[in-house]
Amino acid sequence: MVKHLKVRIETRLRVKDWKGRVRSWQLSLITWALVAVILLSYVAFIYFPNRKQFLAYAKSDETAYSVDEALVSANTKFAFNFFRELVKEDENNNIFISPLSISTALTMTYNGAEDTTKDAISKVLEFGSMDQEKVNQEFANLIVSLEHADEQVKIMIGNSIWMKQEFEPMVKSSFIDQLKTFYNGEIFTRDFGNPETVDDINGWVEEETEGKITELIQTIEPELVMFIMNALYFKGDWIIEFDEAQIQKQDFFLPEGNTIQVDMMSTSGNFSYYSGEDFQAVRLPYGRDKLAMYIFLPHESTPLDTFIENLNQTSHEEYINQLRPVGNLAIKIPKFQVEYGVKRLNSVLEKLGMGIAFNQNSANFNGIASVSPENLYISYVDHKAVIEVNEKGTEATAATSVGIGVTSAPPSFIVNRPFFFEIRDDRSGSILFMGKIVNPAQD
Image (cartoon, rainbow, N blue to C red; front, side):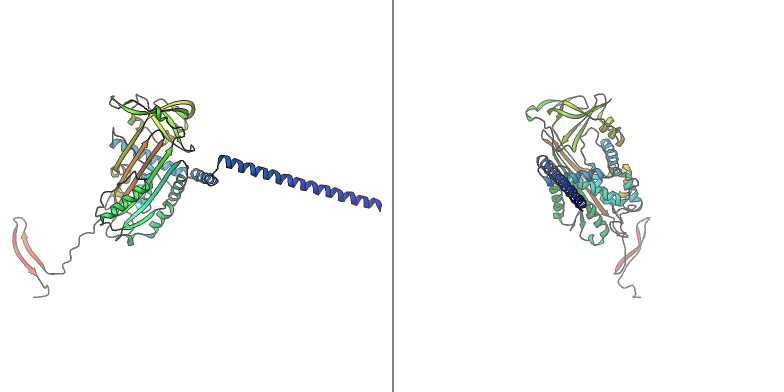
């Protein structure tokens, strides 16, 4: 009996001891978890004082990395295809465009295209096997990711649709819904015959480009019933700024062989750099090192236009991947600013294969509205871009306008009131008979 009692007491003691150890282990685990949370909070407080901003960065980065490579590849291919054609048109002139602004405006327009017109736009924009819904969703992801990319890099992307008030009832709600949902498009209805409408449209562009582009359109032609517009604004500070005190006048060699004096900026530091057989390249990062300017400098024996002619999505990707960090790299670049446009892009887009979209008879934009027996077509695509590069960073903006026109209805001739008539010999011009009819039923 005593023995059994002793066993029970020892068992209870062991159980009590085991429970005590479990509690101790739990307390230790909780303590270490609290320590970890405190440490993580401390790290977040030290390195990310703005937790909201940190979470926004994380979401932006996740969204950016999730953008389908097929869309990125398509946009890059279109950019180089387009730029090469533009170089041919504006040989020996400064050129500055935003291919993303152009492709965004054209993709919004693409949502209203059908049949062979839709195929042509898709081919020019290099969409391949991506369907419209996929293209729209990936554009939406790209736009959202860019707008929250960096607190020190301001990026604004604005999209809008301006409709002639008489045309607005004919516009399909499905088209408007697509542009609202995926492109955050603002919808405006205006009297296109009122000169103030031009001011309203340009005012929207001016606001979206921080006052850098004040006039994208001058007049509204009678055939225009809609504008599909994109505006893109960028302002970023260099991670390693150029020293203002070191800016000096230096020679810049022009293609013809003569030189001009420019304000040359200087800096040095750890930059990614590559030197190839016929060019050098450097990466100049902004803000938190997620966005950067890449400068490609052909060797003296390689004309710039030749280098650009050979530049495509594949070679460009290879060049970017070959850049490597170089410590204490000395860099000199000129301060510059370029205002390019308003540039009409019709001829370049036609050369790339989008001619049908500009054809008044063959274009098919029934996805925007059905206006039979009339027809919708792209009247023009205009683009303007501005950039300024200085010791602090870069400010650049662009705007693209797609003007949608409508053909005139075939003339009708309804004789339903008194009329005059004549019978004429057109060979000599002699009138044989003439008369007037007041009442056709009268004998």
